[in-house]
Image (cartoon, rainbow, N blue to C red):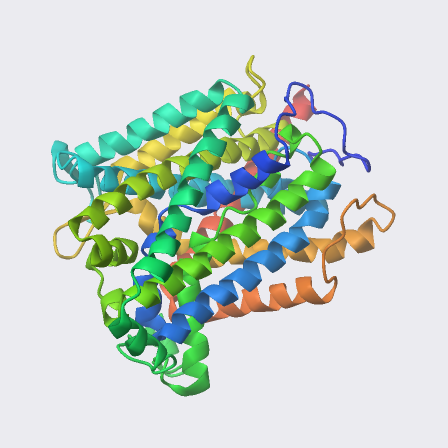
Length: 513
């Protein structure tokens, strides 16, 4: 099959027609920080402590996540500087391997990774807005759930309406141009960063609980209340054992691997600045620096936030925080009922800023795919404000659909489809990250003389260690979360026939013409 793309120039610093280069280093760093910090840091500590079973395990999980994320960002910088074009990781995979691999990443990103995350963050926004305005309830039905078979349903509640309106508003604002989009990002990211620093300050300096400190730090590595982690499929039960974090070295490795699901997703989206590279003023320098600065800032804040939790709450209270709202429990322990209100406001600000960054960046991947003939042609056009308006709208429509679709639970209730989808693609996301970093090695062999304004820090050792660690976590997920990992691979593989059918149609069109 003929390659439907065109190689990028060796010196890719020129403007792409129509795009406005308005993103500076500070703006880029705010996109990274704002896209990474959503609601995860405020809730995932509960699950992590159940999996690792100790205060030390909680902090070690975040330290490992930090090392992995920063290592990946420092490695991605080389690719970002080589190919500062709209599309980011899609472009890197396309150029290192083939258009197929770029398409599979873009396909999964549009269907689940970016849009599913946006949907989850929007519901988080509506849920915490409901703390201030109780009428915004998940059970305040406008349209009662309509079952779509035995496993799925569609509904419209007050909570879903607010989440959908959030998507419509942010999407509309971003169609008005990159300058407005970056202004919103800068304001909300600055506000929520200050809010997270405030949470850390309260936990470390004002809310220190001597009973919690004694419980957590006198028994720092003592494993308590750790959940059993079972093989993910029946056929694996004879091959790998059920473990807990207390089951020796192997059990601890499995627990830390499974715990990475929450911490890595809370730390994801650091690569989004690469999607907007065509709008960065000095892309050869600032995309890589934005990734590095942004990830270092966020990971530092995340580790300090979890330290603050341990200074305020005993381990058992972290593990059993109502609705997993660990940050809310920590502030409530210091300020009483007012703590819940303060935390709700902080998360409302955080989720709004997070979704602005995700919505702004994600549409640029659809644009890049369309320019290669691998997505709807209309999404490959810029509007009069120099942004991919149609791609933004199409992305918003799909997010709203994900918000409206529900899963049916065995207890007769209703869950959110995007939660299942996000769980499914954890392994796939790590595979794409590892593959992209492997692209550094491939491109150094394929294009040894290409201009590299920035070279991967610690090459080849640090990128290689990341690949090994990421694939190691994938192996743990395949063994112990087999069904979700399998579905994730299935979503990726489902893109292959779509890609080939599209290629056959293009070939037929060329012959006809």
